Length: 197
Image (cartoon, rainbow, N blue to C red):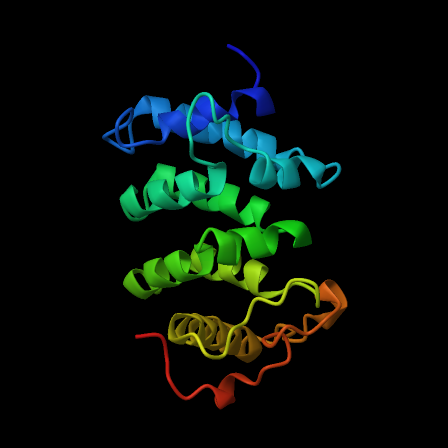
């Protein structure tokens, strides 16, 4: 079996499409996801994760980049299925580099898509963690738009989750990890008056 490679990403993307894998839990899509997860976990440096978001997709083979393909596939995944878990793990890994946050959250509409999925499945902690990753960046990558109702509800849901962390005695100030406040890392969860509905 061929080792996972960035050169094969177009084939992995194709394997996630409804045309090739009408059943998202089928073997081909699962194998593609495992290859993508392996690539996203090779993180001795962040460049590979950045390349997967910035450079993925071969226009000669398929005109879709990796992040939209993953988000579209995620919407088809059965809840709590192995393929959903794999897809979320890949998106989580890709959402860590600062350079990837804006493309995933805004350019590919990941924040809205993930927020809507969280609305349907409010107990999915991996969705919360990915949204949290995307929300924290630096001043070059502002992600919180106070005028966008979807983003406001998404942030409200994340903040309510942070409230649970606070009750468990976990730290809420993430500035040491993320450097610059983008609107959420010092927010008091009591300030949010409307839960994600």
